[in-house]
Image 1 (cartoon, rainbow, N blue to C red):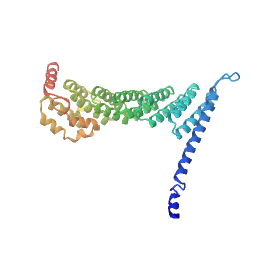
Image 2: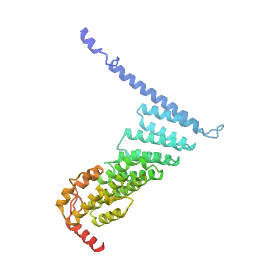
Image 3: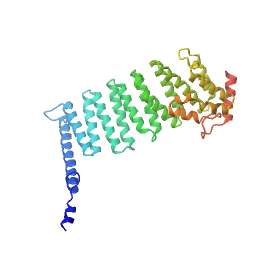
Image 4: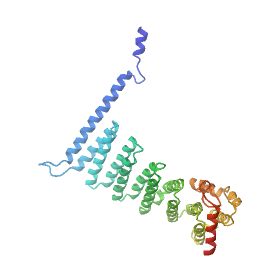
Length: 331
């Protein structure tokens, strides 16, 4: 009987009986909530106008709201944490501290997303508002970083939103002359566009990337963007535009595209399509130069067919031959 009693009273690894640990955790959460509520009330008091206080004290209110938000978050009261982060952001914005307001609005988005990652209607507007505040403080690169984060959260769930956010972010990097920071975002945006079959958006992203690479004088990225553009035109059943784009790129002495391995590969690819040569395309698909492209574009190229489009994508030889005929009569 004594041994049985001893087993019932076994202490957990924390040094406390399991039920005591649970009670302690509940008590701590309750204390955090009580402290958070007190801090929120403190913040409310600072912004409330009275007969003897005609002006809200936003400077004093902001840190009180921030502390309340942190305590609510620790107590896993996420809706309350969001509310307090938003109150802190409003207080800081009223004092003209847009960057700090953006940080708190971004934290509000993080809290909502940690509670429910699928609630894009809840967290996405908060990230966008944060980006707006960062822009007001002339921190367009930070605004872009925030939209990129939101775009990545949207990938695979709402690709339309992801692409929109990526394009807005890339515009912001450009306006802030922060193209040097945008490399990973260009890759992520292009991957999302190609994976979702949004070739028109992919071409826009590639055009932006080529312009940024030219500004940064990174020739390899320029040539990758050019070859990728030709591949996507072909995947989109548009041989005519692909050929003309190659001719324009080759005529640009500054890029020297025609004299590069990627330029030569692009020319060979277009010749394979013009000659309706499936074997030549298959041989090209084994060449190493195409593996240097971004992953999704390289995969798309592997699936490219002479008919235009990609394998499984409904491309047919007749549509491509019509495009070739148009090219021959208008070139």
